[in-house]
Image (cartoon, rainbow, N blue to C red):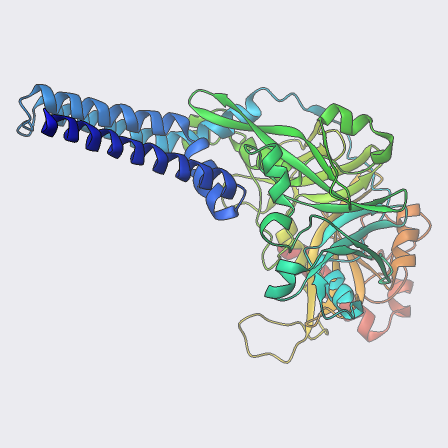
Length: 513
């Protein structure tokens, strides 16, 4: 009896230790859950794939059950255990292949975009490209304890500016320091700095990291971006978040809401309806840029999975803009409010835009502009070639080649006037030290004009200036945005340099046809 009692005590003590160990592990996981590495495991690996893990558990249980029933012996090849194992393995492989496509199909299948007959008009110029804004911002910061974080577009009355948080520099400062307000790079290149310590911020670590309290509040949402606004004299961090609904057998993203993080650590969790109706954010971007991009990429599945994989009827794809860190969607101020702009190419080796997706950056409503068949507009990837051809005497930098050139044409972003789409590119040097000239390439006929400064391109947007032809002569008409020569007498009046420039443009036009 004594031995039996001792055995029972030891067995119960062992169970108690196991329970205690599980409780401790659970507490540690809960405490560390907002850490990025822990969340990547719990959220990305497990929570996002419930069907896959359910299939895995069922497969393991069935194999164990069959193995136990079969006198603890595995079947020979072809037996029940083998067949079940192979079927379940095939199911898991099929799930892994099909689930991303299903999520994209579910995301866009019920969307009902408003059809546009004309393109929304651009109301403010997006003048500075992102790398130039980053250089301007870095040149102005004089605090060795802080540097600028990621730049985000900011819609202002003067056009699209760029805002970046002032985040701690160095390991020790990330642990003990604070994010201190943000810097705004204005379209004219001036930099405004707003100083204000933040209780939670980007660049801070452990429990001060901005994601820590937000994931404590909503663990199953994605926080793809942070940007900053100054409201009533206070800097607030805006964090639109992406939530997920379960639709067998995958999770499908949707706009869940917006976190507003105040300097003192107070956090507002606003629904999309509450955020868009809030007068503090009137006319401001609220809809997640990342979700707008996911919708644009998923548009390829609008006609179904089989069409996206095999037949490709009316299928779109979002072009990757070569050599650019800043990719679509682009935030564009329009006469219909701020929009996320995504120009989509036909599937395959095509270089034209045949559908343009506009996602309202404030409320998330979707508009679609579709071009008639065989009338696609030039892709942004082709714009750089026309800029270089229009200025053949410039010393263009050639990537990967030994060249003395030091000029870039960067960041083809959209500008629309009178229903015509132009790709606006900035000419800058390899140090991104300012904008030398701004060039517009007509997406319909490839015509090129340029502007010397922000004031000139603002006049173009107002309709009071048509730009300068590559030969330096101011345009008299906006028709086609190509040099117009109405008589031989005008040719006689042109210099040799102007004639060569005109011939080069005509040759380039002929090559493009």
